[in-house]
Image (cartoon, rainbow, N blue to C red; front, side, top):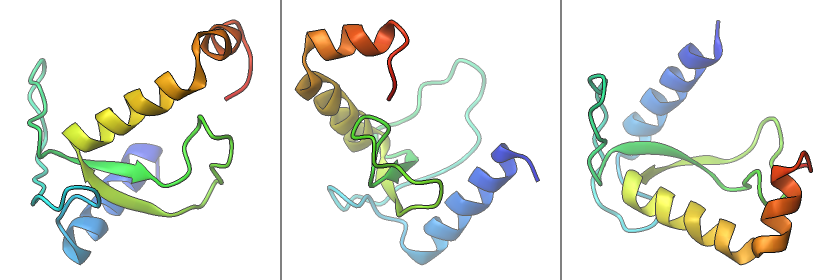
Length: 96
């Protein structure tokens, strides 16, 4: 089974368990986006409780559903919290 199939199964399981954003509580939707189509704000994304940024992300960890809007806002906030020097270091081959 390839990684795309694993992600599809994981998302389907999470949608069946609770189809709501873990942050704002909105009902999330999932469908295959057409090429070039922008995901709607309530599009179901997989949220990793431990991110690549904090360095604590295990191979097998807690994953939840988050809407596209909340997940991306959280990701942007995580990046901003690192500071410009750390982002530059990491972009030059440092580790996440």
